[in-house]
Length: 389
Image (cartoon, helix red, strand yellow):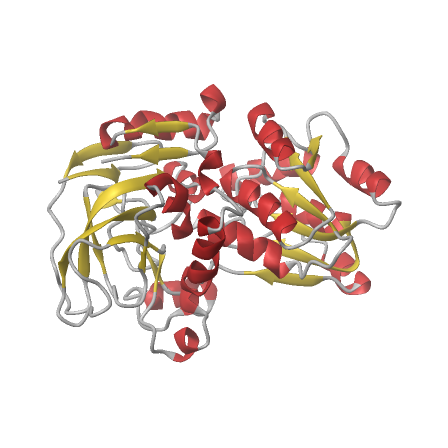
């Protein structure tokens, strides 16, 4: 089959790889009808994610039609149309039983590598390094889905692929980011990063009752998309974000701040963001946490900082003194997608949101390498790429 594979920094190829096969009786094989390039895939593209191997099939936002089912995957049958969560979960362990599917204890065969880096292991993920299981990803013609009786959700015929594809990751992630804020009537929520996850967080904040959302970015297409949702927008290349948020909140700060950027914050944003970039280039640091620092400073006393941007290692010069002295709450996670799927599918069916609004570019797997480059450069107004094998 055709698939997108990783061969080093900036080197994504569309090439032939072996077809997947049933390896366990709880597996299913799906024929991929739509998949997407995620912002966190760009961290792989830019060489920031450790434990990648040449030829790894990438991608974790996937849906399709079931074409083969293991005998124990009794929830599915051939012909079912499903969306596949990016988190792989057994459904039976301590964490799965509590709804924390992204912390599943059984689905990361490389857990000892993760333990050495993070102190404990999250669940396995599709297409995202050998720290997290080395599972083949979904930017391919076919995908093997382990524990298929737990993960995939069946999609009704009346909904299109593009309406539901983002249930695999970015819609639940953005919704969780807003849910972490524990929004009350009248709240102001600030969101850093108006990429796909940030856009979902903006709309989810309004769905959950926020009175005002302040969206921070510099890319015109992203800011315009945030404005269409009703957000007030700030361009960090044109304005001092801390001063403007304080001005807009009468000196109090936002009730909650969402970091939807993560490790690749723009090095042009400030002096500290440039220093972060130099440290990473000189192997003196692993991540660029400028946005997180700013979110902490812009959050009101006893407010919440919600973190869904991906970080991989150790963060320098985080103003923890500010956080503890002002009573901030931190909420963060790799999204336990499965717990959100029924609720969010219902919101789509009711017409409360159509997540396809973020799609700007479409193509085939053959187009994938060029579209990775386009997305990485934020060229041609690119906000979100969908591939149709």
